[in-house]
Image (cartoon, rainbow, N blue to C red; front, side):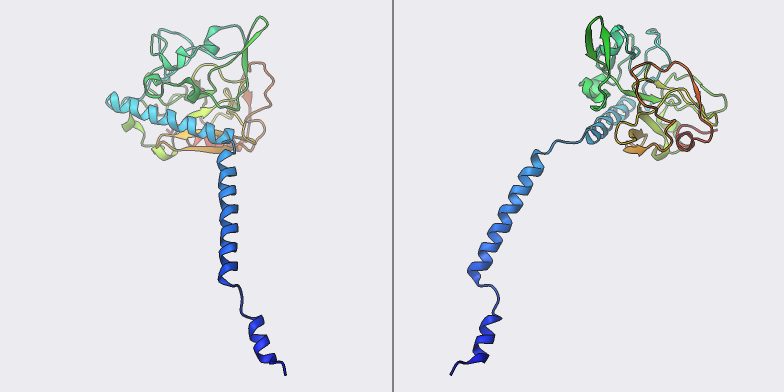
Length: 267
């Protein structure tokens, strides 16, 4: 006579030790393959852009540490007699400024004062920026996609009377360093000098932030933080056309400008 009670117990016994060892081995192999695949995936352009700006913010702070809390100069325009954190102007034409890495990393009469702290020109450009300058039939990649808040930096010019200019670390009290933006990735058709022109309470675009990363662009703050910020109004960063924007554009009610104004300066 067959013992059905014994058979039921045998059917419920679960995995043997050998089976469990095999299962663990298979899962371990899958984990190793997954990690190997993850390690070979390319880093996104947005992540690289964020890293570039973090490195520049480290350099920005090291400069002030070396110069008794004075912030690196930020100059409006292209006059080489008044140097800024970067020198020269970016455009699409056959001018050497747009392709000259010395204006970024080799200090001279034109500036490039952060160069000794970062040394590589790659930190000054978003990898998603594919713009170039044209020299006859030759196209050469432009070297910079970043600009600095026009109210931040030693010697910066007052854009709007009655608003704070931040020339020293101790000046950054309103907004606080966590809420005062410093560097921004600028739209290809907009970028020229290293000075991002913005006038609080005036809903007019003079310079335009980039939206290269799915309608978002990288912006940094005085506490060293870099973030990918989503621009919501299409007027904030128009489609790149390969032609320099030379006139201001009224943008009433633009919520992106409201957000940016609150982090640019204060009364």
